[in-house]
Amino acid sequence: MLLAAFTYPTQLKPVAQGTSLPPGFVDDRPAKQLKSGFESLLITNCAYASVRIGDEDIEPDLALLLAEMLQQRFGERLKGKAVELKAFTVHLNGAAAMRAQMAQMYTGLIPNLMNKREKVGCAPDDLQGGYTLGEVPAGTTPLVLVIDIEIDQQPFHARAIAPFAAQYPPRKRAGDDAKRQWNDAVDSLARVLLTRLGDDIGERMFGDPPTLPPLPSDSEVAPAPEVLPVGDPGEAGQVPAPEGQAESSPQGAGH
Image (cartoon, rainbow, N blue to C red; front, side, top):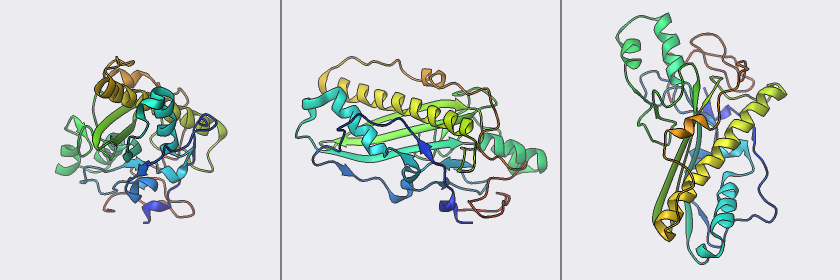
C-alpha cells in the first residue's frame, strides 16, 4: 500500500495580506512531513494508526502561518535574525481506537499489551502524533500539532493537542459539514500552537510575559464536534484506503 496516496485537503483561514517568508528564512522540514499518510500500519509499531496530514494538503502553507505570527508578534525585533523551520507536523492519532478494535477481534498477548499503557505513540511529545492518555476525553481522537524552529541557532518548540470526534480526517469526497468541522479544528489548534511558540520566543528572547496558560489546557481549546460521521472509518479493524484503491486491514501491513 502506498501510504503517500492518502490525501486530506485542509483549508485554513488565509494569512494577512502581504505576509511573506522573512529574508533568510530556511525551510528545513523533512520531505516526509509534506506528504499525508499513516505513520505505520503495523500494530506493534509505536506510531501505529497515527495519520499525518502533510503540508501539501494544507492551504495556506504552514510556513506562511509561522511567518505571519512572527511578523505580527515581533516585527522589527527579529530583523536580521536567521529563522529555520525544522518541523511542523499535524497528526490525528487513531491508535487507541484501532488497537481497541483489534483487541475485540483478536485475543492474544500483543493486542492486550498494546492497550495497557498510558503513552500512545513513540513518545508523549514527538513528531508522529504521540500523546498521553488523559490529554483528551475518552472516545475522541487527539489532534496533535508540533512545531520546532531555530532563531540564530537557538531552538524553540511548541505543541498543542485537542480532541476531535472522528477517527480519520475527511477526504475529498466528504461532505461540506465534515470538511468545515475539520478545517476549523485544525485552524484553531494551529493558532494555539503558534501562540504558544510565540510565548516561548518572547519570554526567552525578549522577556515578554506568556499569553497562554501551560498545558494541558489546550485540550479544551477545540472541543470535539457533536456530529460523529467525519472522515472515512471503514469497517472495524480497517483503515480508509488511498484514493482509488480498495480498503485493506492494517493487520500485518507495515511501513
